[in-house]
Length: 125
Image 1 (cartoon, rainbow, N blue to C red):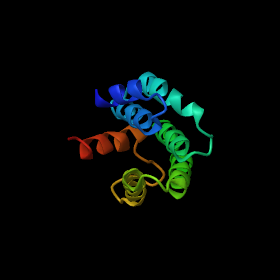
Image 2: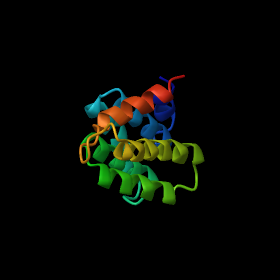
Image 3: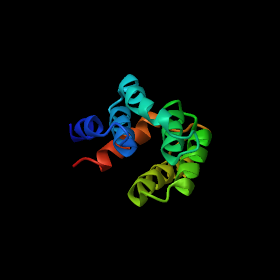
Image 4: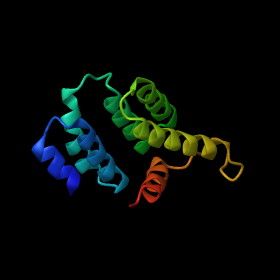
């Protein structure tokens, strides 16, 4: 893919590594997502891409409170990529809407995989 080529040409292209990991995560390929995101270990643990990574992994584990907090932290720290912030805001909005939906029994959130599947559907080219 284009992301793999970009990373091969410049292994320090952390945004491409993040996007590749996100692509794998939304395809339910967790080991591949972890492998792609391993390159983010070169960045500070407080870097916005690491906050997003941790937030998305918490989402997969259905830990919605932690996921939301980490995604919000990443958005606050990200001054470089507004499009990515908008994507993360969209995920947060989906999570919030589901938690307030009368069709979802109180205290029974949908699975994190549901939100990532919706994310993938809205980002198909």
